Image: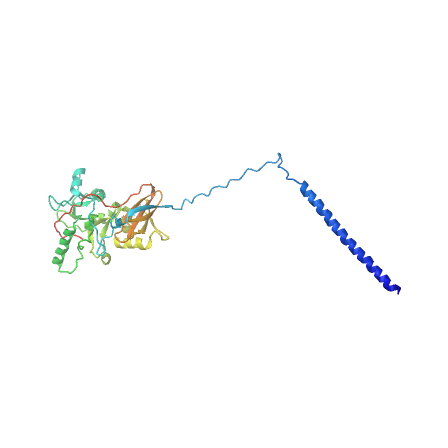
Length: 367
């Protein structure tokens, strides 16, 4: 009977020991917490030493603008101006909306400037050979430079501005002469470049037979330098619907005349190329450099036909020109070498009242 008592006593001792260990652990934890709390309460932030040198604050450098990035601003033009400008396309498909050209008499300009090297054939004493005023100086310069190169001085201006009524009379006369149903030598009334005042015809005296051959080929080869093109070149009849006319010059402006001549493009091809490929939202614009190192950028902007005005994006700080196409919008020409805040537009509109003229018909009456 003594063995069970011994076991009970051992259990009691172990239980007492376990309880003591637990109480001791609790006491240690409590004391540690008390000590830690005291340390925290007595602690404080240490101030910065006067002997410690503070580093200078680093200023972030401002982001430099990309010098190659072009910034555009808006330029607003009347939507109706898409029918006016140096680059309007006038042919069998696109009628010219005339009535506000700023025209001058070629012979009167010659008289004012004392020039006798060339003259225009006025239809009568009262009806003068007229041309858009901005064409006179480049046309005169071209003729004078031709004389310096060849010493030939028999150039006549035998066709320039025509009224719609006179154009109709030329068209009817050509049908009577050829017996054809449609003319390939004279444009329909309302569809002739001559009604715009942007075109003129050369002839020579005394034979009145200019073919642009021999020394006269100088004009064909150099007219682009003055902003002119041979409007109806060889091998382009399917596009222009007019036979080859070496005597018919059309003003489009120097950059465009240069590009068309160097790339053998007629006006139909050039306008179509710019409209379809180099519109403003495209990934690329037409960029080229002429013989003198002048750099140009050309692109197309669709006209806003639902509004009286069209907003055109133009590069900030660069000289630019805006011309209608007579099709569906505007062509912007940027002079990349010229910095200016003043735009130069090619609108030919004017408050000047249009004067209609009549002319005599000759074998060289073109378009």
